[in-house]
Structure formats: C-alpha cells, structure tokens
Image 1 (cartoon, rainbow, N blue to C red):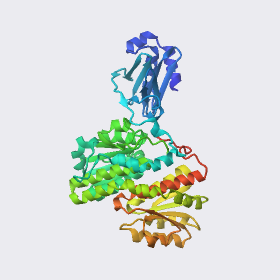
Image 2: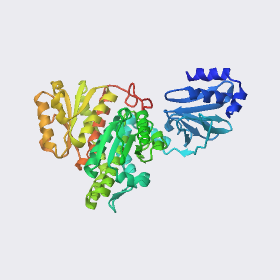
Image 3: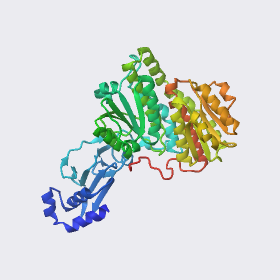
Image 4: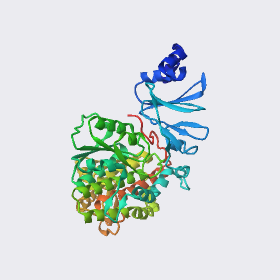
Length: 495
C-alpha cells in the first residue's frame, strides 16, 4: 500500500514545484511525506526510488527504526543488534519522524516537514556479546549469563555500607515515587510475570496498594488514574507496542510513568518520565531469561528502597540488600544442576500436558515456567496458584501427568504440601523445586530440584532458573529451534 501511494503521489504531483512549496528536498521526499500523512496503523519503512538512486528514506510509527552511522556508510535497521557489526553509533527515530540519507549525510524531519535535530547515541554492547561463545544456543548462553548479568544490573546500585539502593535513573522523580498512593505495573508476556512479583514486593515491603495489568488490556478498560498514581512499564525491548500504548494512555491521564527496560534508547525509555535500565546486554533468544531475572532484581531494588523511605527499619533494609547481593552466586549453584534437570526433561518428554503450581511469590514463577515450556517446546502447560487447582484443573490430572511444584520454605509451605498430596493421590507425577536440605518434601517427590535458601521475597530469582533449564532441555530433546520458536518474535511491535 505504501509503495503504491508513494508512486501515485510521485506521478501525480507537479514535481519539484510541489517539493519546493512543501519545503521538501525533492519530489521523492515530498511524495513520501504526503503518503505517510495518509497512512493509519504502525509501520517501520525503508524506501528507495529508482529516480533518486542516491537517496534512502526511513520512517516509523509504532515500530522501531534506527539509523546506523558508520564510516562512509549508513544502515537502517529495526534493532541495534543488526548493525553493531558495522557501527556502534546510531540515531533513534521517534514516531512520525522520517530520515533522508544521501552520500553527503542525513537529515530528519517530522511528517509536517519540521526539521528535527537528532543526537548520535552509542550502542552499549559489542558484537562479541551477541555471538554464541561456544554455547549451542543463545538461550542456553543467556541462562548461564544470569549470575554475571545480575551482578552488572545491581553493580553500583547497591550501597551496602549505608544500607540503601541508589537508582540514578529515577533520582529526579524519587519523591513522587516514594510518596505515591497507588502503583500500577503494566507489561506483556514474561515481563508481566515479573510485574506480578513486583506487585507482591511493593505491597509487602512498602505497604502501598499495587495492581498489575496486561498492557493490552490497560488502555481499553478506562483505568482510574488519580493523583498520586505512578505507573511502571516493564519491557525487555522497550518496543512492545501494547506496553508503549499503555505508557501513552497513562501519561495522557496525568500519571508519572517509570520504565524498566533493557534496550537503551528504546521507545519506552524515551516516552517515560524516568526509569531504570537492566544493563544485562543484548538478549538474542526469543524466550526471555536473563532479562526476567534482571527485571525481578530491579523491582526488588525499587521495593526495598521505597520501603526504606516509607516504613522499613534500616536494619531490615540492610538485611534484604545483603541477601540480594548473594543472588548471583546462588544462581551459579543452581546452574550446576543443568545435567540433572536435562534428565528430568528426558524422563517426561513424551507428556503433552503439564501443570506448574506455586503460592505467594512463586505463583508468578509457575506462570513463567509454564510459558517457557509452551513457547519453545510446544508442550501445553498451565501455570496456577496451587490452591486454585482444586477449583477445576484437578480434573485434568491423570496417571503420569507432570506437576511441577515450587515449594520452597515459606509461610505457605504446609499448604503446598497438601496440594502435592492431592496430585499424588490422583496419579500425577510430582516434580518439586524446593529448598536444599528439605528431606521432608523430597520424600513426596518423584523428581527433586534443590535451590539455595533465600528470603521469600527474593526466591523467584532462584526458583525460575530450573524452570528455564527444564524448558530449554525439553525443547532441544524434541528437536525444536530454541532461539527462534515458531510464530514468535523477540520484540512484539504490533498491537
């Protein structure tokens, strides 16, 4: 459609007279501007014209587009990873902007022909970071990168000496954030599961009313945004269309909006009032792993600091900060069990229906474990709060059906032991992720995965790792393309 419209206006117009009158550089640029003003929906376009072979035009609306600036070369791409082999300098276009590139340089304008000055940004990762580095798949590499990635994410932000968290990205909005009366977390997919954990964190540590909303639903349900509401948008890519639309909706309603993203310079990073970068490097595998645990780390840091400023004692905050700093080493210990988890996947590889069950902070982890298994192994899985199983899903349990219980030490431990007994009585196969040394629950499990002990609020960063490995090994054993699962994209830039 766009190409035909450009051709139509190009042929119909009065050539350079129209271009000069509109302030465009030439007839080609004028025809593109006129076409884009007619288009509805989202697009990311790279346009060439045989009559102007030395000009390339790029434009975007709702879909990412960047211009790589190299030595005597320019590259249009939708993601920085596509150009980092050639250059680390880039210009990030905003919605309703276009860039015209010639051998002499480039200029950017709005669709109304207003010149826009764009700064060159530095791409903050290298080509080496997106190579496999000896791993068979990017997903496995990124799972094993989590200890280092979390250390980088938290580095410079944890002040153990003074018992506080330092987040420079929200420094100018810290008062609004601390005094907020209501928080809304909005996200999609894996980031939504991280946000659910965030909801529990903010309510537990800061005692502030918090809700988590799918971004795709938030903008359509006429949300109540009152004074004192802070909206937090979570997205790995920073380009998720539904989340970006939710950000715009929240801003229109007067909310302060914070972003938690990984991609520097992304649309959500630029659209929000302030935010925190994950700083975990590029995530190439479609199934998010290290970004999820980093989102949990950032949400934990935000909740601890908010709690410290509102009601938490200095000693309690210092204790949580100390425990948070130990998480990377504890993940390393879990990763040592990869071969054991592969054996568990192999023992259940012929099963096409799984349940993932957790309570409290580990309920969102059950959702994430089910999602991981679904999206890369194509095995149907359902994540549930363990207590909800008896309200319908228990009817699905039959002989040998795998039920993965996240049953770490915590206030609901006895309850989840009862849920395990219910599944076992109906012939289900019990796979348990539990605290190391827990011999009691081990006796009730067909297969057991141990994780190091940690405070309940920080356990999701540990309990999710075995589930990532379980999904990975199941997908490989079934012969699937782990890094590029069918029908999925890394950045979902359509609504």
